[in-house]
Image 1 (cartoon, rainbow, N blue to C red):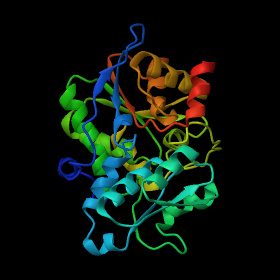
Image 2: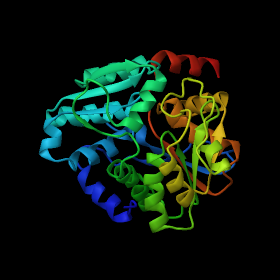
Image 3: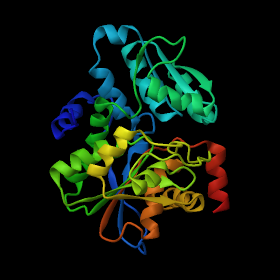
Image 4: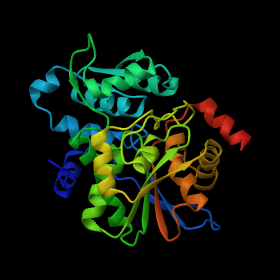
Length: 314
């Protein structure tokens, strides 16, 4: 069954007590090509929007499913979302992470009581399709290809239009697509005229390539400080849903993204990770046009040394 606005509204009730309602604030820059606003999901208890989808999915699991414990595949943010909710519920949590996962995010999962198993990137990505992993027991929480998770993400869309009904465009980071599809489902139901775009880093932009080709494409993914999004390809079903909901996609270069991380820190005094600054980088480039643009600052879990380097070099 396709995701509906009813699913999103139900999710809003389910995440009460887990996720917070994050602020939508104006970017403190007055010479930008548009009126830019920041949806600060980096202020969530785990520093990422992922707590919304994880809380929704786990709230809808049966007692038997939860009793088995849970596990997920994540480079860090969904891992923290699942671990945070597992700790709250008093159940076991295991995370399959790529060996390129930032140490900051791995340590955060472990602080929450989760166990982290690191594997090569390709084996990690395979877990998304398998929805299982040899030797790991528990109920799998898919980071993006799960209607419950997408419904939780979609609650961001409800908040956006409640806080600013006159929004013209929304820019959403694309990792696996669950964030973009969730938010777009809510926005299309409530304001069909709004422009909705996915954004990616140039070093890993399979959605942009796949949307252009009309079918899933494999791209040359290069790991970088933008570790919260980016992969080699897209799921066919996620691409199909996105084609019906989104108006297109844009990419940004690493230098543009790093400059946006620094700008958010200097002008709005908040910390964004690489993935959380991609939308702003695109908005500042002018690619998304003019008007009132909301940028989803998806997370703020950036390694301290990387942040220090960005702040000193750009």
